[in-house]
Image 1 (spheres, helix red, strand yellow):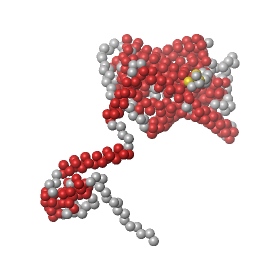
Image 2: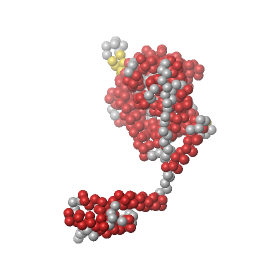
Image 3: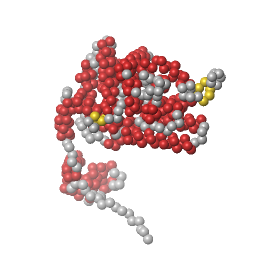
Image 4: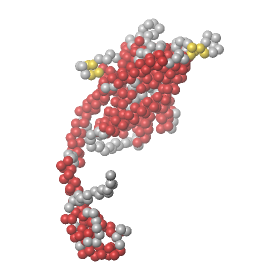
Length: 516
């Protein structure tokens, strides 16, 4: 038979409380039974407010404590000092601790290198270079697994599901569109993971300090750096972050140039085009040419933003001066759990937010790509892609983009990706899935695509031309909407759209004909 007996924990004093106040401990214990010397000392300080002691006992204890010369404040102070002394001894035995002053001295030593006008900038460029190298190097394996997995899944479902327009919609519309965005999750996670590590370590604040000198030459200061860095994730919150800039002129310029920074929505477009037209080679056996081109595209957007700021600073006549003050935090080890949570969260946001748009556009595009007008014009019928509604629409705008090296399919993608840049990949996935029933990956389908002359569509001139177009073009409705809200005027978003569109067209045209 099992008998449940009560268990009482053994009461132990953390410090020698009796030696701290022997008379007080004896006084309390002579009146009331307590569990420890520590409890006796604290009992002496609060006995007047306790209901577990009678009035008689209170009077007796008062006399005893008076005789013991009890001083509550003095004993509490001494007890606290003894307690922290004991804690310090335990910490010295069990924990290696760096004192704050040592951390500050170490931070100052590191800053002498990282904030150096020459070495600091070189190290910063090296960090960015490693970031973009890792985006291709680390992500290539999971991306291939995802791409091949979707291809095999499509092939299996095609054999299992009956021939029906709903099957066609699911496989060539919905599934193809989802594949076009899910495949880029590894790259998105790596991008935000590294950014999170830089922020957590305290290095991101140093970037603002380093960039302040450069920013002042183009009419801004270090306060504009954080919105520009944030734009690598998304231009919308980055433009909202410009609210912290007090100077009206610098705030407006920051808002206007922020869309030049390459955001995460451009990343899927960049990576698939780079993979199509740039050889997958390694310089010196370690430097990926893919990563090098990606790095160059991000730098191109950044320096274009600085050039635009320099020009705007000349034409916007506000003479208000600004001061840049910033407290630099000490360096610390990044919190890996926080980084992992950030990566998962950003990937989820990317899939959910982009997925909603892509799913809707993929379904609409599937319908426009699968059906077209009959010759009599009275009803719609199943048609080839070229003679579908999407094909006819693409053909009508082809004359505008043909000088850039683009065909009508790319024209359709340029139009649909105005909703969100990453829709470009989803659009191409839908178009090439509707056109043929083969279960190759999207990259393989695009690589095999040929134009009406039998030549490959995605050549080096066309690929570079398209990359330049997406570096400069304002292909984002959300960004235009937020610029209107922050400036309270339609003038600035319209000007952004027109100027960035013209710059994209001219630069794309120039690169295509230079490389022909």
